[in-house]
Length: 355
Image 1 (cartoon, rainbow, N blue to C red):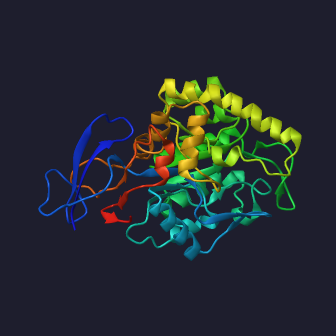
Image 2: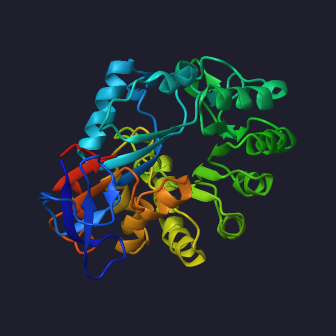
Image 3: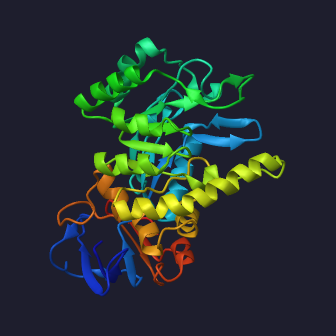
C-alpha cells in the first residue's frame, strides 16, 4: 500500500507540500503509482512524549509497575492518538527493555532502570538500589543492555514507608555524577536527570543532556542549558497537578511555580534551547502542549516542542526520502486551535498506518 499527503507542514509551514510513502512504507522522492491520498490538511512528523513511563501507572498508594501486556496496550493507545516517538525515562528494573514492540508501535528510546540510592526513590519502582560507588558501572550496564539513555535521580526527598517525606536533597555527590556522565558520554549514551531543586545548574555544568521536571530551574540555569544544548522537559501535566486534598501551602507553591513558568518558558524559547513535551505518569501529550501554551509558549513553539524540536534533540530522522515514514495529519490547523491535536485524521508510524 502506498500513500500521498498534500498538507501544510507543522509547526512552521505556510503552504501545502506533497509527501509520498511507497509500498515499502518509506518516504519517497516521487509519487508512487496508485498512491492513496491520506486525509488531512496539516501534517506533523508525529507527536513525541519525551518523558514517559509506559511500564508504570499511578495508584492511590503511589506509582507501581504494570505487566508487559498492559504496557504494550498503553503504547498502542498512544500510537492511535498520534504519539509516534516515546522516550521512556526509567522503568522498574529496566523492564521496558524486554517489551516486544510490534509494527505500528511508537518508536521507543529507553533509559533502563532508575539510578537512585537506597531510600531516595519509590521502592516499587527502584527495585535495585544504586550506591554511589557503583553509579558509573551500573549506568554503563544499562547501556550494555540496550538503553540509549540513563535516568539519574539527582535529588529526591527521603522515602519513609514507601512515601517521599520532607524536602528533596541531592542523591549523589556532584563528583560522582560528573564521573558517571563522562563515562556514559564516552560509551555513546546520554543522561536524563530528575531534579526539583536548585541543583539543576550544577547538573548542567556536570554535563547532563536533559533536565527532567526542573522545578528548581532559574534564568541562569536556562542560559547554561542554552550554551550546552541541554533540553528541559517540564512535565507540566505531572508537576502542576494538585490533589483535591492538597494543603493550602501546596496550592500556593503550585501557583507560584505557574507564575515562574510564564517567565522561564518564553526565555527558553528566546534562547533557542530545546523544551520538550513529557507526560510522566499524568495527562497526555496534547494536554502538555496546551499547558506549555498556557504558561508562555506561542502555540507554534508549543507544537514544536512535541514535534520537530523533539525529533531533532532525540536524534530521530523524520523527513528524508528512503527512510521509514512517520507522520500524523490533521483536518484543522492546530496552531489556530490546539484542541485539533486530539483528533488526528491519519497516523503512520514507520510505514505502518495506525489510524
